[in-house]
Length: 190
Image 1 (cartoon, rainbow, N blue to C red):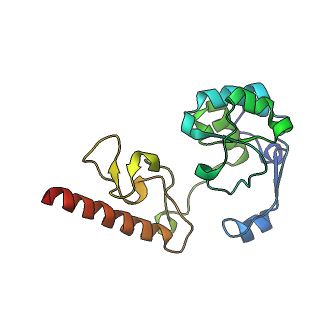
Image 2 (image 1 turned 135 degrees about the vertical axis):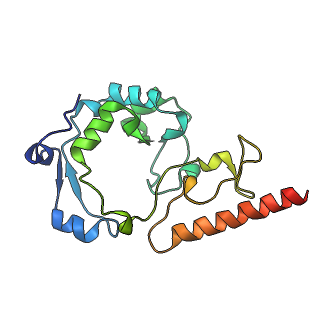
């Protein structure tokens, strides 16, 4: 188990981030983060296979080829292989995987806490948006009605949608609420 109470020098041995560049560019522009995690036991192939099996299926993407990581996950070609085979063939076939919400596993949560400790918040005055929520594949986008529970409608940040700063999240909240309210109105009028 990773000790989440490591000292700053110990943490620095895992990640090297230029603090000035971080402050200048975080959430605005890409910047380099060097790390020493490649030999970490949590990144060994057997442990990654274990993690992939433990996560819900929708939290693991596995894809093939020279596809940019920024491509919408629903548009990336699948390998057609199992998780085990994808991991074994990463080098040979240029397959790659994305693990989401790895903090569900206590060891990975501890490693994240070690590398990126939360030291507090800037308070409600600076709060912008949440992330996560009801997966979009569980909602009819034409009505915002739950596919799992007919008659239940969602809007705004309860859904797994988040955007960059600049009003995108407000627009999503208002637009999804309008779609849901319109659908509820049509349903009530019968």
